[in-house]
Image (cartoon, rainbow, N blue to C red):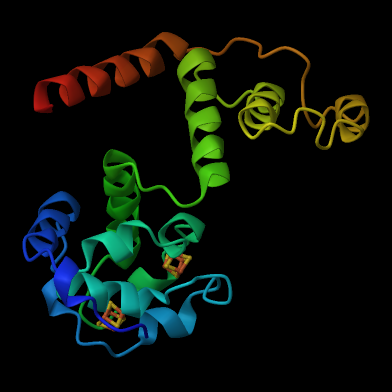
Length: 187
Ligand code: SF4
Ligand code: SF4
């Protein structure tokens, strides 16, 4: 684990994470079970149990700039293995939200995918795969990535040319509206 940077300690950060996640991060006793089961440890710059430790010692900047929080797949293995019953996956989720707010997102591609996915659900009430792929490719400035696969997938009916309509699309839009309204009131 890297050296704790004393000058950048934010003592209030753990309280923020605990409030927003509803989890008691301070209860973590560093058993390492979460990391032992995490399928993405090989790709993380900081293993998940060390993320928990960095939270406890107020290393806000280090955590919010980490790649690990964005590479986490929310598989919840860590949550199910934690003997202190901490929903670790929820904590990682909250860290992504805080990272966005702080403008410290380390993995712009992952962020672009989340945005494309949510925009699609907001517009169509469901996932419109072709729209997500096109938007994601444009946002990541690789417009023709996997373009050759398009006709094959269309031909096999795996993706559709048009988004189509579903029942309840209006209700989904309402959910997004309510969320935006809540955020404005909080801000
Ligand atoms: S939820 Fe994230 S941190 Fe937890 S085990 Fe899965 S990939 Fe690892
Ligand atoms: S499994 Fe739970 S107690 Fe153990 S290191 Fe991970 S978060 Fe901490």
